[in-house]
Image (cartoon, rainbow, N blue to C red; front, side, top):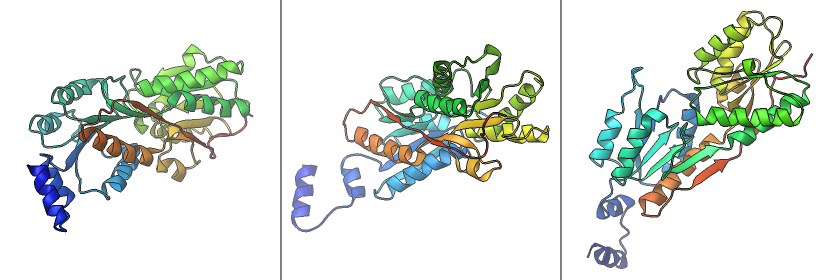
Length: 305
């Protein structure tokens, strides 16, 4: 009956808004976006892409930081799901602790898209960068500069993103006859700059056996690392080349400019919305989409002295 009424109204020359259509379909016209912290510079780029996509639609967005007060609290997200306040959910950097949230959405048959999850997810549409290939590219760049001892410090050891980046780096270096030493690989408690600085304090104690290049699992880690290294009198890249992953704007603004594998974060944000809208329209959307990362060479890497 509603569909017939809609056709009659349109035949009279009246074009109902998307809002009216949403209401006729029982939709809220709103999606939910969940992230650890909206202050994450990686996420701000992702959010910009989402905003670009939403500008062309009568769709609003509700945003939730799971660690707004430094304590993990997903209560509001569970309320969104239970009370059906949103038509779908986007989770950025989904962690193991978020599995209950993902399962609740699946149980409620609420469409869900995960962007760069640190977990292997099934029955969910996933968007992630091709981290293995990105690691290979960065390994090739450092090997071409003559570095034969390369260290790696990723985010948390449970992170799929970090493990894949290390896998690609190690694989490419190995193909070139460069073996990464066990003592040169570690994982930090987070992807934050503070943990990068703490790693620098540990690494730089190795006065005689120090690697000539270091790859950090994120730009934020690398920025914290470089700052701590410079405070100790280490010159980057003369004494130590530093590279990372993500491509956040701060990497270009800091000095030395950070060599990085840049993710197409805005594109991923736009595509996350599009995939969610496809799922909301009752189309099954559970595929994994991989995005190529681009090597951006700046001043933080140089030929081995």
